[in-house]
Structures are given as C-alpha cells and as structure tokens.
Image (cartoon, rainbow, N blue to C red; front, side, top):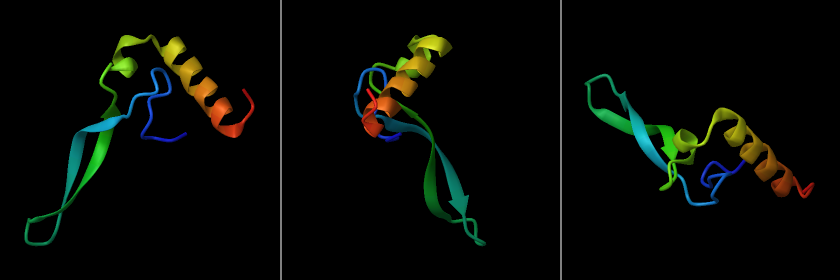
Length: 66
C-alpha cells in the first residue's frame, strides 16, 4: 500500500508524530515519522472493520484486482 494515500478518502497522508534519532553528542540526526493521518482523520473516525475494508479495497485496486 502507498503509505502517502489514505485508503478510505484517498487524501494525502502526512506524518503526525516523529521519533528523533540522536547522535553520540545528543544532537538530532534525523526525525522519523511514527504516525500518519489524512486531513479527515479517517483512521480515528472509521471503525476498525471499515478501516480494514478500505485498506483491503485500496490494495486490490493497486494490484488491479478491483
């Protein structure tokens, strides 16, 4: 699945939280996205069953099985 597209609403998903990777001196080397969400917050609004069905449907479409 393309992690940049919400499978439910097809909006672009953006990182909502990060983990900071630090070097030996404590400086931040990079920020890694931990969680992603779309503008409609589908992951939080939809129930688990609806979300899982949206993911499955999106994956089928990406494979050309839909």
